[in-house]
Image 1 (tube, one colour):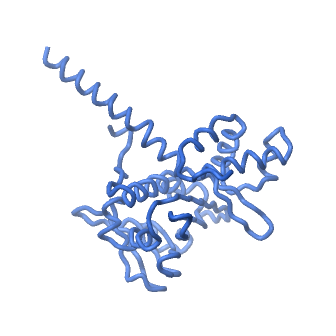
Image 2 (cartoon, rainbow over the protein chains, first blue to last red):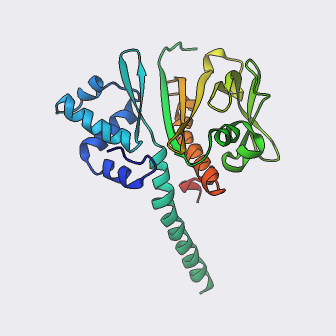
Image 3 (cartoon, helix red, strand yellow):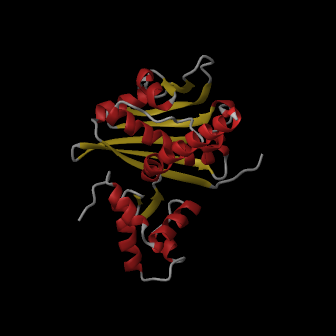
Length: 109
Length: 156
């Protein structure tokens, strides 16, 4: 099943596995690696790694480019930024507003 | 100067509920780009022409510049890309390709940034910058509202 590329559920599901998070870290350290290069850092069969990469690609967290016979994998941070905007910054703003209110309150005393 | 062959690439993909024409215009039309990017991309968009990335403020600082390599509206745009302050050094130019494709009622926008000098200021800036700009473009085209591309948690 192909995940809807704009679906946050697919992104959270893809992030819920330690191997897949490790794959993202490996690509963050060195972008554009092949399956073989990524497998050097993973203790698993190529077939399992391929499945994990497929889920990351379906969630649009990894984009791939074919160069000759090689398929290279790139970290795609755009959905992570959308999650940051939706799930982190929103609450950060609330927290900052509370601190601002507290400061006003204390200064009034 | 240290010579280095080490280059890195980024490939960013975003899906936008829009049309290829609108996405192409969002990149190439200053009056659209300034609304979600805080900058305008200014050029006559002919192969071989210069383009400039201009901050949308009173100073109108030219921050980036380069040449237009390929223009095929509304599906493809290829540019060379350098800091305006380093525009005299050919080694400082990287390459940005925008590929715009219709995808199941949406648009699949792929931004490929190649030939970046490993560890350079540009690499570090764009690693953080592209996801912000592309999220903001998506938000703007889908909702009419861009994101604050200058937002920084530290500055809050």
